[in-house]
Length: 275
Ligand SMILES: NC(=O)c1ccc[n+]([C@@H]2O[C@H](COP(=O)([O-])OP(=O)(O)OC[C@H]3O[C@@H](n4cnc5c(N)ncnc54)[C@H](O)[C@@H]3O)[C@@H](O)[C@H]2O)c1
Image (cartoon, rainbow, N blue to C red; front, top):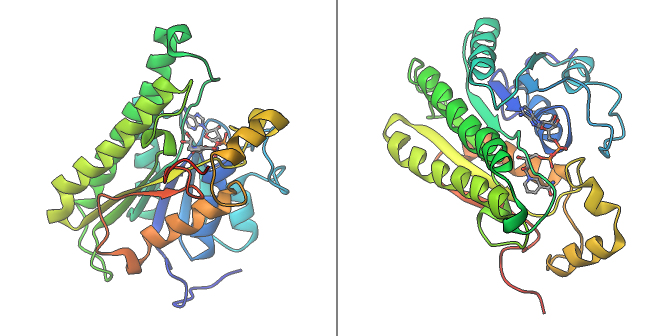
């Protein structure tokens, strides 16, 4: 059982992580818990996606945290459904009495195709979950933060959104997904601007190609792997832990004066064409 440990960066802080059952959300939830945060894990279901690469994916994220002595619970939440997002926040606050960190990681990416072949349903689904779901969650987070005092680190609360390199640079056959992630990135900047006066940090991480269930079909095709590697200057593609480490930093006291930033964690994907 892990007891209170002041050397951990997030001891006793309360965090919500959406899309926490697999991939980056899982890595983020586990990394926050390792630093002492109590984590409310939110996803469509507690089980990790079968196509994921996690070695321990048969154990749900909140159970891994508890098995390691941390405090955690699972709350079912579809980020496309406002009533479920309301319930998620109500549950977290009822259980822990406060909220310090919200990581909006859940996202929908639909298979690649040219824009002309995309449908209105795809637009509604990706904009609904990635755009509106993130905005709704941010609003509920800030409403709660504003009820709380500024904490010992000088912040009233921290939001980290998981956007995408697709929200920064155009990538073929990802138009609507990219537009939904650009919405996340720009929301990050605007909301940070509105609420800096309240000492609320709002930042985003924009991952490049990361090996998760979402991208697993790409990782099965040697031609696509070669294409992804060609677009990534760094000699390897990304792992969920690459993203989780930066999220922990943004949630830590060391990042107090950082707000409104979209930090690309992408092996240089958005820097330029690596010829
Ligand atoms: N994998 C990549 O290469 C990559 C690159 C850039 C950005 N991203 C973004 O990173 C985030 C995490 O993706 P990942 O690659 O870890 O994927 P993943 O498939 O491994 O995990 C995504 C998790 O989100 C959950 N989820 C999906 N829809 C949801 C919804 N409506 N409500 C709640 N939970 C939902 C899934 O059940 C799953 O557990 C997403 O926002 C994605 O768009 C991924």
